[in-house]
Amino acid sequence: MRMRGGHPARTGLFIFAAFWMLVILPMAAAAAPYAAYVIDARTGKVLHSRNADTRLHPASLTKMMTLYIAFEAIERGEISLDTNITVSRNAAAEPPSKLGLKAGQKIKLRYCIRAAAVKSANDCATAIGEAIEGSEARFARRMNRTAKALGMTRTTFKNANGLTESGHLSTAHDMTILGRHVLYDFPQYYNLFSRKSADAGIREVYNTNRRLLAAYKGADGIKTGYTRAAGFNLVASAKRGDERIIATVFGGRSTASRNAKVAELLDLGFRRAPSSAPLRKPQAPAYAGKVGGNDPVVVTDNGKAAPAAKGKTIRLLTAVKTSLRPKVRPGHEAQPVQEPVLVAGLQDGIENALSTVVKQPDPKAPKATSGQPAAATSTPPSVTPKARPADLVLASAKTPEPPKQEVVTRVSTSGGRHWGINVGRYGSRYQAERVLLKTALNEMETLDGSLRKVIKRKAGYDANFMGLDRDTADLACRRLQSRNVTCFMIGPSS
Image 1: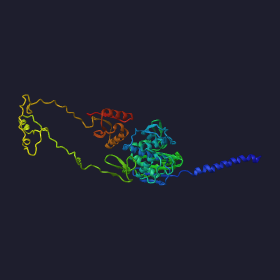
Image 2: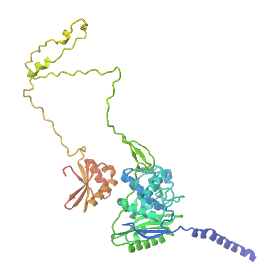
Image 3: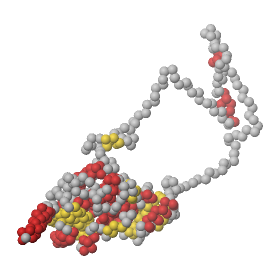
Image 4: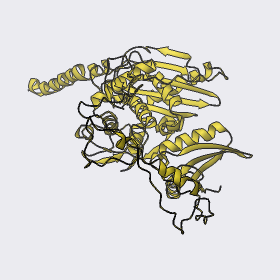
């Protein structure tokens, strides 16, 4: 009886021990590797590094590159913030975190950008890549070209969202480089990463990094990431006074421990960074021979493009230098053109003009033979002009003046587009130009083709868009005011 009574207890103990050995311990041993990198964002100087060049899973830090290319595509005019992108089955099927898009659904690019930046939505990241390049595979190739141009030498992207995939790897060093470029190359969009929440069109989304943003003084971004293979990752940036630090952590054990480690690294960075340092922004990447991020092309003068050898940019110079008159086909020689005789109406020139008229031979008259004289055809008969009509008005006589034609003058040659809008007055020309660029990118539908103009006033610099018709200027102002942007119309006489 004792043996029977004790056997179930021992069996349960053995099962628990086996579970501990086979499941719990391997999970603990498989914790993601740790890496960290800290720089002075102003100069790029390294302030701390640990395993920074080890290739690890970046998780949703990948979306920084997806968004970087999206901002770049908007700036180049490849796509606009208000473009309605169609969600594919591939994008809709992505696992969480996600916005909840459905296959076939249309959504504005601006909403997908917000969801990818704030909520880290995988479905939106994939939809962005497919909208820009046509497929996620082509978008991944563009991601890798961009990474190479930015100096991310140990990074390989396979998808737009950062979900674990074989070969999809990066480093703490490379992700810090990317975060710095997002900050300085597209400052007009950087505020996205500091928003605690955002309107994503179909619903409100909340920032995955809001705990650090709320707890750490000066924190304003940039991006979190988590997968089981990667652990808890974060690229964080904080600014205090003139100092700005970027710190990156790979392989955190939890959100709380990761945030604590990042705060510790940011503190370290602020201690080690000089209080004043020159701002040396990173150079934006160059894309020689790329059209919309695709493969190199040959561009001809007629505007057509064709594939070219990789690494080469070719432009064919096919301008016409000479224009030769075509030869006349045999049997189709051109007949001499007889110039018309203009008979003047002036009194002094009538007789002289008429005397120069040569009478044409009658085609029905018999032709002269070789034995007949040709005098009849060589000497024209005298022609006596008719008397001038009594009511003929001479050109020298005074004639009534024709009615004066109305002369229409225009302010410009822009087809009546004499209106403009003002989007504020600023303390410096740089601030005004920056606001104009940002506004133009956000409101491309109505401001496309307008002229950005900064006018110096006594109280500051006016940021104006000129060259609009009245209806377009009114529409642009109403759209900007709906987004809490200051705007008023400028008339032709202003």
